[in-house]
Amino acid sequence: MTITALDSSIALVIIDLQNAIVGAPTVPYSGSEVVARAVELTRAFREHRAPVVLVRVTARADGSDAAPGRNESPSRPSSPAQGWDAIVDDLAGHPDDITVTKRTWGAFYGTDLDLQLRRRGVTQIVLAGLTTSIGVESTARAAYEHGYHVTLATDAMADLDVEAHRNSIERIFPLLGETGRSAEIVDLLARTRN
Image 1 (spheres, one colour):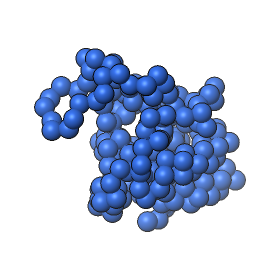
Image 2: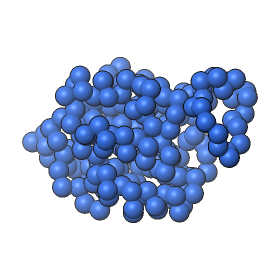
Image 3: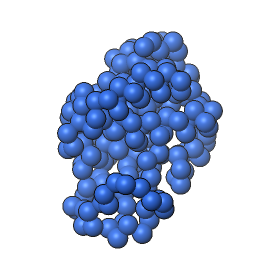
Image 4: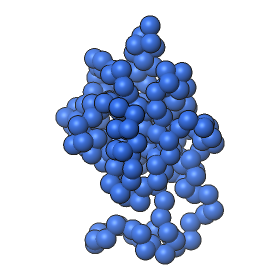
């Protein structure tokens, strides 16, 4: 797990660090640990004047905007708590950040994420967030398919299942990009400024 380079036109994309999801029991890091590392990354990207994208998932209470198709998962509760889909306070509220709202696992499908990145000339994205094997992996796959260089901050993500997390980190992510720790990314970003 080594990151060799960061492009000069880079963006940070943070997946689903929102009220309801951050509170879920995740492994190998807690939601609060993931948020803390995401805060460090956002601080570094903002200092670098690189785009920060905060992605959140939402859905209508009646499920009318859910992805079609059958699956074996239980349906969502019909009355989610007020504010369940709001970005956590530690990350929200910066005027230059881009907020993307999705209704499926990945942040590209049905959103303007690709347009927002291409408008800014972004060639590489750094991904972090929850959960590793669902929102982060789906977004990483789509970013790779869209031609972005993909970097994954492996200590700034977690999953509901340790084996799912491990599979993404060890088997899937190395096929899509480079992986490393948040501190390594922050350090490389600081060096590209000098």
